[in-house]
Length: 72
Image (cartoon, rainbow, N blue to C red; front, side, top):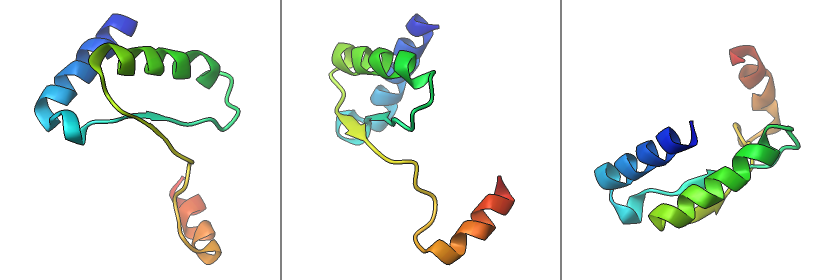
């Protein structure tokens, strides 16, 4: 799966261009992220892609939380 992910990332980088493709990292304490985040870092290094650390944000205002929860 790692080789396929690397191939896909390189392909997306070719499609969107080096300046428009980033590897996103998130850490919400999900156990699987302990495995995937280092793999994503390795992919970013191999294709020389910038790394972008983000939060899992979905709405701007607290009153929008109920609508967001309904969509989930």
